[in-house]
Length: 330
Image 1 (cartoon, rainbow, N blue to C red):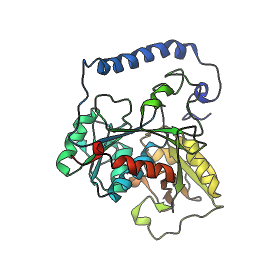
Image 2 (tube, rainbow, N blue to C red):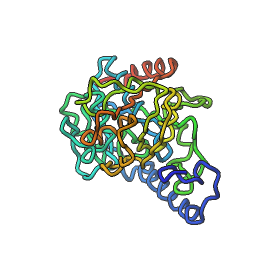
Image 3 (tube, rainbow, N blue to C red):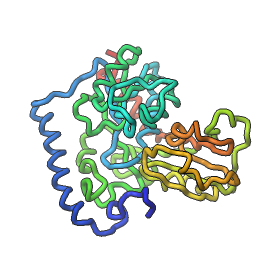
Image 4 (cartoon, rainbow, N blue to C red):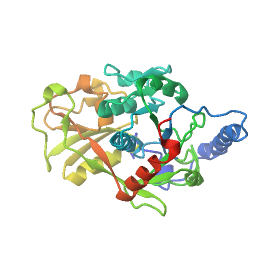
């Protein structure tokens, strides 16, 4: 296991350490208390004047939420809607609510919000309290909000919930944090509108989604025109994700011979992180990593973009749901 992998006891069958077993009930109690505050109406979620769609998951680490957000934004725009995206902006340096713009840095707004803005051009805002982010977008002409990773954020009322499940790792050992990878129990999935299985085989009631690789793009715009590597080229591969191995497997499935360099999720890259790169091999990375590496990039560095390919049944079901009155512009 690399230093960036999830603990071996989450997914690998290793014994759960005593400290993790002791802390699991505390996490369960905190989650239950959080839910009870809103269920008892001691605190009421804030309802936006436009429909809110939440995309989230019940596990710690990546499951494919951001590619689904991008696909959902495209679907909404194809229906003539004007979506905006809100996010916590995990890993950023500040906590104040702010809009994501062309001059924003990943350090200031978070890597995933910056990637979403660059890929779609739609208004994006970040804040620990999602309601504050939504308010920043209301003057931008949005008529629907997509919340990236907001399933556990009960303070924001929502009109539609979509949960993404990693189809390969699923729920690991089935334990709550920190004894396992779960932020909520699988029972939470019974209360969402759609459960989307990213890769793997969908369980009953789940819809399928697969991440399809797109043509390579240069990390540094100045490198445009340089020929990208093609399989079976040997490449360095960099991934700072919740599950870096998924990215490496995507490259190997295309035929690349991969020298893998995993980093922690949301890693803030420095030049020293690329000491292995002597220029002899192309270097491939994810879009989430590339938004943090533009200033460091060399001509042989490439982004491997991916697109979420939604099953026809999921796409049709989403289109039907988006036409319901509660998701219509208000």
